[in-house]
Structure formats: C-alpha cells, structure tokens
Length: 440
Image 1 (cartoon, rainbow, N blue to C red):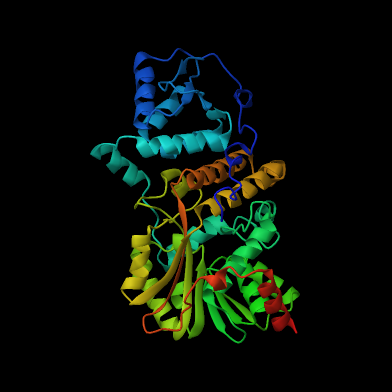
Image 2: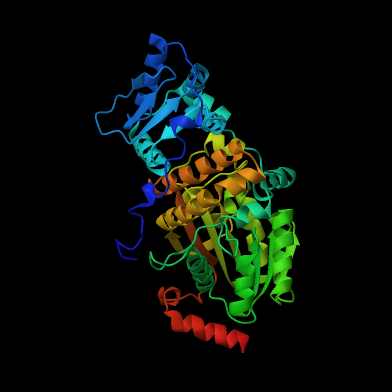
C-alpha cells in the first residue's frame, strides 16, 4: 500500500461530538477546593500534559498545556474527580457511562490526543502501578472461565451486532486494498488474504479455532473448495453460523462445533485462528501450541491473526471489567511462546494496524447511525459504553498503542514454502479463476 492510501486523514473527526454539556442537567455546586484543583493539575501532568481542558461542576476550567485545546472534559460532580484520581482508566469509563463525565469535542480525536500524550508521560510510581495492576487484573481463561468471558461479550445478541457490522458479520480487522472500498468489500478481501496466506487448494481440510459467526469458514469452503471444522464456545454465534451454512448449501462442507479450542481433534492441512488469541491468555499459549502441533499435518500451514502490542501490557481496567473480560493483546515475543516450544517456523508476519483503524471507523459510523435503535434495545448507559469502547479502540490503533498481527507458520521440516509473496497479491483474475474452478 502507498503512504496515502490508508484513508485515515479524517478518522479522528468522523463522528459528531459524543456528549455535550446539555446531556446532564446542571445543578448549583460548591466551588472546587484548592486540593481538588491541585489533584487535577497533577492528573494532567501524569498523563503527559495533553491539550485537554477540564471543566469542573462549578464551571471552573483547568488546563496546563500551552497547545490549542482539542477537547473539554466536563466533570459533573466531586465524586467523579476523586475516582479519576484513584484510577482514570477505570473510572473515566464508568462515570462517562453514567453521565457524570461528558466530552465536548470529537471523541476519537480526544482519545488519540490523550494516548499520544500518555506515550510520552513519566512512568507512574510503584504504588500507583501496583494499584492499577490490581484493578486491571484479567479474569482467567480456564475452560469454564473462558465460556463466561465469551458469553459476556459475544452473546449480547445477534440483532445488536447486525446493526453495525458488515452483512457477513465479521467482527475482526478488515483488509483495505484501497481506501475507497466498502466495509463489505474489505472484509471479503481480508478473507481472501488469509486464504492466500494459507495456500488453500480444493480438497484441503481446515480447522478454525474461534470462528465468530462463521463467515471465514463458509468463504473458504465456497470459494477455495476446502472442508472446514470450526470451533467456537459462543452459543449464539454457532447457532447463527449453522443457519447460514444450511441456507447457503454449505452444511456438508462446514461443520460448526460448539466447543473450546483445547478440545480440537483430528489432523488438517491448515490451522487458522482469526481474533481468538486475544481471549486465550498468555499462560495458555503453550497449550494452544500443543493443539496446533497435533492438528497440523507436516506439510500444512497455520495462521494466527490477533490484536497485539509493541510492549507487554494489560488491557485497561474498564475494558476488562465492562467489555472484554479475560482479554489480553500480546506482543510478538509473547506470541512466540506458541511457536518456539513446538519448533514451528514463522514464515510471514504482517502488521495491519491502520487497517483496523479504518475498520473501526466504519463500525463506529454505523453504530452512531443506529444509536437510537440500540438504546431502545438496551439502555443509554450501554450505548455510551460501546461508543466509548469503539472510539477508544479506534484511537488506540491510529495512535499506535495497539497493533494487528497476522503470523503464518509451519512445521520446521516443511520446505514447500513460497519463494516470494507474489501469491498474496495476485490480481482479481486469480480470484475469479479460483471461484470458477471451485463452483464449476
């Protein structure tokens, strides 16, 4: 991709201001104390002095940056201030959900500005790091706990996700060959990109760990002539996937299994996992590697697609508690625990960070367009939580806090590997020929 083809120039300002001072009725409040004002200046300093103005319940405005202000954060009551001092990561989200905090300005631009400032901020002291570590401690990912964690996020209801995902219900990073393609086209391109990396051929067998609503499995079977066993522990996703496979005449080539990845059995020509590793937990990476080891034929290919980080770190306490329990985006070095202990050879590693930023921009735009419908299905706090989650995630990718890794690997004894990456970027005629060969 060329440098100007990402289409990210307007992402920071794609959505109207999320929350304004009029959203919460104002009542007369006491003036802030000198200690409270001092705490807020200290808080801005620990965040790297972002160009953000804090507006207190009394109307007093506090900022310490000399740069033009990007946003104004309205703190509606003293209790919200005290919670911010205790842990801004956790309690900013909770108080925003409840309307005790409002952001005046473009939400994504606000988060991106804060994240970039935090990258330059001084490291917090030991006591504060210990407190944050305790508050953000992830839930475990044992067999039982994994089910609870997945139900918490993915079984919110298919109707909710249909309102803002693409028509194939893909809830993972899309692939944009150009900035002008639609979300639907980019998700189809992502699936082809994965299939090309796996070098799928008619007659191959594939096992998928964590299949979401089943679109990749159906795509592989329909356009690449393979048979797929796809594992997932989300009851609603599996039910939807089976219904779609039956309706599309693919039930004889795609089997959806409601079970944990640890119970995968059989040998396959390809192992693929797109968007599941974030829920596995680093402590379980050697177990996942052992599953791949016994599942992948000697000549086979594996691909793992995962949100990641440049440096080890924990998910924010708010996302861990309210959105994604048990989640952990790994570094590449952490991912290597899957491969090194079982002597796999890494064949290719690609970072699609900006593609995820653009994917999230599409999701956020669709989410905002359906916010009234979502609020009618749930409540106002739920809408505000998911607005915060989507906008904050978008900013995490554009600011470089989060990455998106695709790693292709094989057994060390396998020498049947491509000499170049040409097979990943062949033109549309190759895709058309593949489709014609499979469907003829």
